Length: 530
Image (spheres, rainbow, N blue to C red):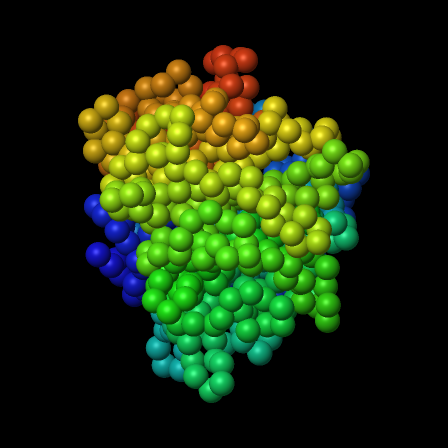
């Protein structure tokens, strides 16, 4: 079937397809400043860690609910920042003072988030995507053009009182137009490049690209910024792998480290007729005329790419991406990266949409080496392929200790299987954890479902556990935004230490949900974190 999500047809397959597609205003240009030109530096006040919006040296959690009803407006969207150390919660929506926006039905503010320290004050700054925002046109709104906001952290926190910058696509990238269905801000990736400069990548998968006078609808672009330099990249840009085609959706998924970033093109046609087989492009942060350098391209066509698999219609290779640093034995730093790639539409034998995952190593030269390609049918992997499981709809890979040579002891991979039936419960969903550098990928894998030792609750039909994942060096974040348990019907977030998952510690899982722990009782799909 095909699901129309605010006017954009999204390839979907099976009874859970609407949930899979979902996961995942006029902003005046006047007065908006360049990224990095926020409030004056306050380094003496801000200690700063990767997600530290108030500069107290503690990790803060960002939890999104893009379908939340805010002030009576359905699907307006809400983002919460949960301060470390139990120091409270900030709620951010388009009603937040200084946002320069209006609450509107279906905007889905918070569909994507990213963070880095743009202004160098030691406090993280939050980027929030609203891809279904309508912008003002000549006499009528232009539907689903999208926008983003940058909310600056400070020693007093983030949200009310913050400096906020708002951008439509035309405001962010001079020369671009706000067009219906572009979905500017659908995907976001941010961090600090190896140059020391903050960077931001914005996915615009609905953008049409004109090639030889022909507009290729939904071909997609990304907008890349490093420091003060900003540029638009398409598959027609010099060196970028792939061919611009209608429906490619270049920029629908993003992942990155300080040295590389990856761009998913899940709608890519491979060969003559493998529609939406999918592809991935990898870049480093070295700029040539302001443009990041493309170093590798991958798909399942296989030839010359050392990748297992066959490009088939609907595979959607690259629909999910996650990247972490990799330090080889001959280096003193993380010169390389590991990239996990989800292919949720992959058929396994005669089982449709069972899904699969590949993990590859990226080297500075652009060399790509496949570490593992596997699915639920791989030898020794626990479980069996199931129709509509969508194994790999979300992936989260992490190196738990980047200060040592990377090995099987440090790297963990969580794979979301939101369509998996659990104990006969339809579409309850699960997560499967692997050590991807093990010679036998199934030697130490573990399936985590609701009711297990580390994941509270019980499986319910259409919970879709595994639809929302994010990983840190210490913690795996598991959101169940579509929980059917009456106690968590507005969604729930579980933060799970990797050491608990490994079995070396116990009792470290924490639970957050609307209406408890200082969180207001507002929510529709709380914990859409992935």
